[in-house]
Image 1 (cartoon, rainbow, N blue to C red):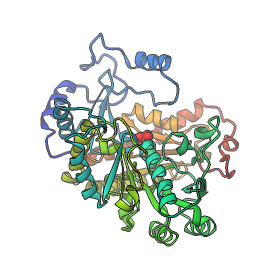
Image 2 (image 1 turned 90 degrees about the vertical axis):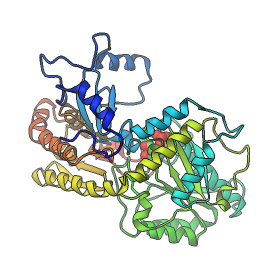
Image 3 (image 1 turned 30 degrees about the horizontal axis):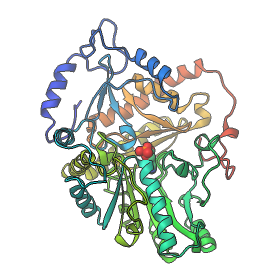
Image 4 (image 1 turned 120 degrees about the vertical axis):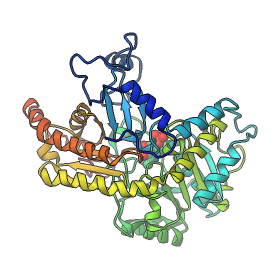
Length: 481
Ligand SMILES: Cc1ncc(COP(=O)(O)O)c(C=O)c1O
């Protein structure tokens, strides 16, 4: 099995990690009698850390019970020295692989000279990053932020401001259209567009000024534009819906969206926070249909898995609608983030990660399709583009076992994947993952279905259906599961 699969700059770290973990190249649970070479007797165990987090941190996540203690490339180790293959990549934030040496070098060098100026002053890294990013993606300007949700908030504010100034939408009447099943983050404006009841219930009142449309349905979009077009400032969408379960729109959808947005003078706003930066086999997922959105939002892998960096790209006629004092963030465009972002972009370009994702994505999907052929009863669909893949399980034959249970079993076999909703498992490894590791990841799924699922079925009593509670509060449809 390959260790890390990048050509440049990994050797030193690879060798030292191989030294550290020599003899512990097993997956999952430590075999009895094995002494972990990475954890000293004084370092807390995984279970202690999990318990501590449960005690002292808000319960806003339900993690798979594995503790990351070290990581390199596509591999992760827990405090006991167990090794895992990462098939989530922190939701595509580590496209370049964990702890990429060139990104770490940029971080270290910058940290030694300047970390923060705030935008009250200039710094000598942000202008370099701004030029680099805008040239790379062919936009006039960038507005830097930190997290993805902030990037989306920024794009929404920008669209509203543009709507009032350029489109002459009457005061406070601007509308943003978004898609059923979308995920754009967790802030109030953003959850106001969500169809996921868990994200919205108990957090009202939600923000007004939104309309929903089915994802992938160009006719529905046209209808809404015809009915409300004079007040619609922007159409916000993910080119492939990630959190909804890697939902790919019909061919030609993005092109039609482009035409409709131009025709009705609506900003086409692509949230490429998860799909962008080589994840789907192109630099942007919109590149698959060669469309140029008016506004592009980037995040996650822009910070190379090292530091939060997000960015909104647009041309001057849009971006300059925002004036000094109207929007910003203390840390947005900070020199540390700027240096890291430049290095992160260069790694993606220099290591051909988009091409790599396209090639290995075919391999991964072939492997997963073979698993589906073997277990057609359990796997409803395998879909994806590049290394952005999902396995949709058949809720009925799986029940009462959930995708979460399957992910726990995958973890025991050394593969880390995360469920989305009750029946979908994402397979989205770092783009540096080797072919052998990809094969191991799909073999682990086959093994879980073959060996673990029958046992889980025996252990878990058949339960009640949860369909009623998962119907969307807005439209009553069951989008997930
Ligand atoms: C498409 C998309 N937009 C926005 C976000 C929010 O990003 P963040 O968690 O950095 O706020 C995510 C996170 O998963 C995402 O997938």
